Image (cartoon, rainbow, N blue to C red; front, side, top):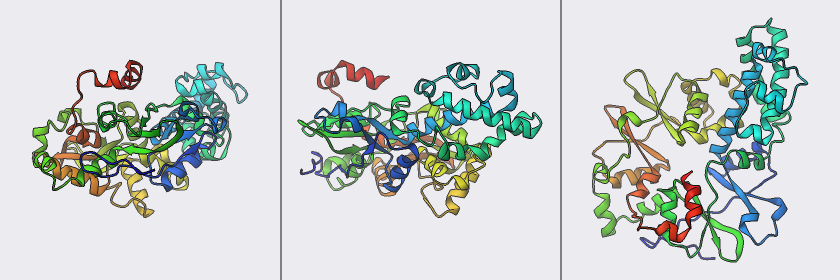
Length: 402
């Protein structure tokens, strides 16, 4: 199949599709995403491999956002149960595993529905009882044992060792799985990637259940960068970002993380605010000193021997450890910045050539705004009245707005 091209400049937006089987373990899925340098992948239902219906063939998308949600909830549940005083106070023993046990320690949320947290409580309470005996009932010491044992539990012991992608996709759905056809308009794709906040859009061919490819935010912005020299692009690109209404936030709406905060807090903040990255700042002046993104969770999972004390690990120490391994030099530590009077063209060039997802606007080293790939795409499109309702239907729009 010949790859579709952008009607604006002829650039191709597509990449090789990497798919993950639903029965793949979470640990193996992280390895695939990391080795292929991708943020997400479609999940195939092995029970519907011969189905001609894409709705049956694909269960959804697994991405770092879903994995972060799973890791954080697992860690939080285990931390509660590993506190010896909490475990004994609720009257739970190693054998008290079940829905009642989950409710007793206040466990709720998607993982409880999936049956994941119930098992987590059982394993963690057992560890809490042992920690209680070893520490003489010191609750903080018992909870701190989680830092040493968590990775052993999550990667080497049941039920976490066998936790599959299927469980994660069903319980921690960050974004809906909404494909477009090969003959769909690019306006529909660009709206999905910007206004409706999808990171990537699957492409299918009518009558064929297999995905043909993905259109990503990064690919679209890279395509725009390739439009240099065209009058329409150069006219827009020469304008200051402020003329385009960028950034789409005030300075007090910027979500950041202090370099001496815990790295788990950084991932929690991304989860709670549905953002993919945070500027790392230092001191009361909030001078920007680094960047941490949601995909960095893979370092915690792929290099557990480096992060055994992850519950006490600061953002600064996390970044330093990653750099010391020789991985992601420049991408994890160096924040990409611009000034408020920068042109849209310079921002697009920076995002495309640096292969990053966001650029921070700074004023005397203090972050005053953030521009994402989604924001840049929004500058080039306009949604006609009722366009989305007519094209996708009301039900899809409702799903996207949730």
